[in-house]
Length: 208
Image (cartoon, rainbow, N blue to C red; front, side, top):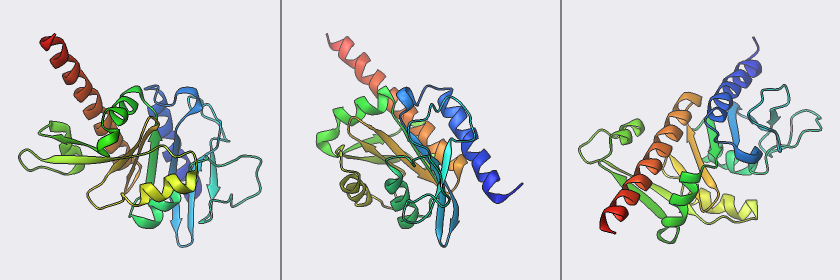
């Protein structure tokens, strides 16, 4: 099996698993995986595809300029530039972006604060944070329609202790050193979002 086919199947497996959770409503979301670093090449989801289906046209191989390496009628995801920026500024090898109700609600609740902080919850250990009462901060950026502007704002929040960034009323982008790590982080974030919203709801009901 060629290296490209190996990475293609790895990303397709992640896409299938996330699709089974309904994390790609209305063809939303995008995924990518690094194929090589120098020069940068990565597979990224083709625009407008139903991610619940597995086809030979799910991904496009692009270069460091976000341009397809080979001639194709497929268009790379509109947010390919974000993936490129993450690969160039971090040690990431896989990026995942999904739209869920929970991550959208969290981003709106805390959007004015520019971040949301979680502390003392077991799933924080998924990020390698094992100390007592560890906390993790998720930056929140505005949902700029202009992708270069959105990319620039996200890039400003790329730090060693940041594992994902929320885009207000849009979705979350996470990354990891490989597909397994990126998926682990995404699952942990979505758990924390869901847990937090349920706790808020229960507390609100108890006070009413």
